[in-house]
Image 1 (spheres, helix red, strand yellow):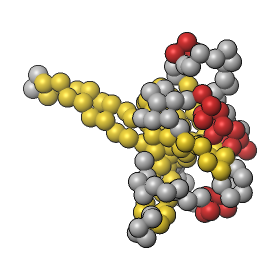
Image 2 (cartoon, rainbow, N blue to C red):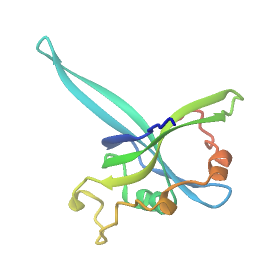
Image 3 (cartoon, rainbow, N blue to C red):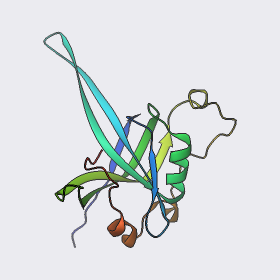
Length: 149
């Protein structure tokens, strides 16, 4: 018997505000990009390297992320890598790899968030909160944007 593991963990900052949409089945999905930066020194010169990750959240997690996250928010994201293919407006097939998050933790201090007296519940681990149904993924298309992020 062969076993496999597909887990991705990323801590970084949102590169833009989250975008929430609904699948044809009415399930919420929120997408956002996270930037991680690695700083290092080569021969006395400081360098940095930034990697971008596309993240999708589903159901209640999608709603909470859309409500409380914004550009620059620091988050911990855990999930599985998933490839997705769609046809762009120009008719060309596109492909992207994204993190299908099943755990999102908000790492900013509450005072760093928008002034709001509510403190959100930021971690959802129940599978029914997070996981899309197969029909949602197959019907979900990138809306009007040929770029995956």
